[in-house]
Image 1 (tube, one colour):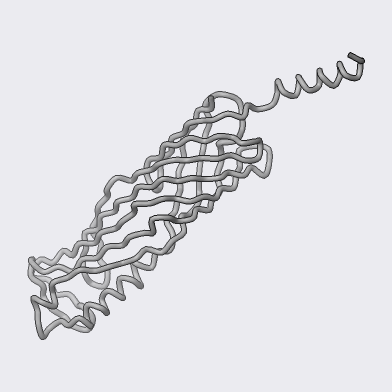
Image 2 (cartoon, rainbow, N blue to C red):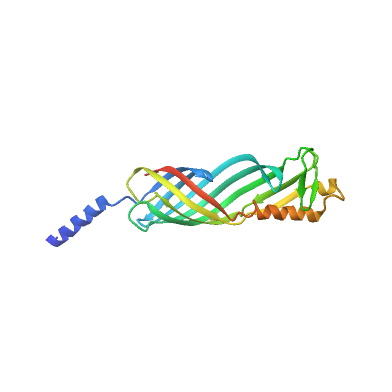
Length: 220
């Protein structure tokens, strides 16, 4: 082996000894859309692949839309598959991918039998047995775009991860009601259709679901 070969081999071994390990890591995030558990794997220093599952559980709160008080219940679960690109040395990355979702918002009217409401162009006082309910459902598959920090190729140990992005897709809204049958001659189907359109123009005009989360990772 010549002196030049020895120098080249020494330089190569030194480079390998200081290069970050291209390995996998497990991670856990909290934020929107819930608690996430996932696995990331570095393909090379610039690219990585990830998959995670998340759940928001079930959250409820009351709110008013177009004069009607609703109890809103949110259910959000997803499986995400992502590709990470690291344009610079370090943890900053650009992320794209697909999410497979079970995300639903159910709105249940809270009629009390004494409060008047307006449906379409008609005002009435619904009984406690009347209902005008709605459901917003996001697409099963949605593209994801975002930026973040972490999951880069690095040495074994703990790390910090963060994500800011959006799942892109418009929610579909449907309504169910019994007020037309229970109040004939007062409320028509046209009034129900007009109220449904108000919901579509309000809470139904949602075209993306945000992600804002932070967490920790452990690289093997």
